[in-house]
Length: 119
Picture 1 (cartoon, rainbow, N blue to C red):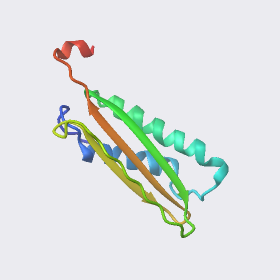
Picture 2 (cartoon, rainbow, N blue to C red):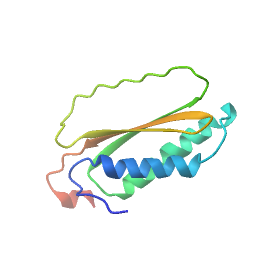
Picture 3 (spheres, helix red, strand yellow):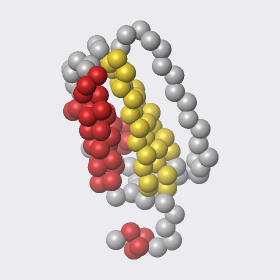
């Protein structure tokens, strides 16, 4: 994977990380309520690990919803008050024959005056 500059939130980079986490965990898995908590934790942990490995000056928040595909509707909403020139959000919907998944990643830039402080 080729990633963008590290001073702005890159939706493209985050999108590819999240899609990889979802497909590696779920793939063609059939929805099973007893496994949902573990699957959510696996997806979120994988996303956070890969996001952290980018070594960018961001704090990340990752949420994941897994819902059985049964014809019921689902709506989500979020509102943010932040620096839209650096901070960002990426929503990745995914589904297979038995479930819907929505992973949302929020990236909040960390203001650092001296880059050497990161080490």
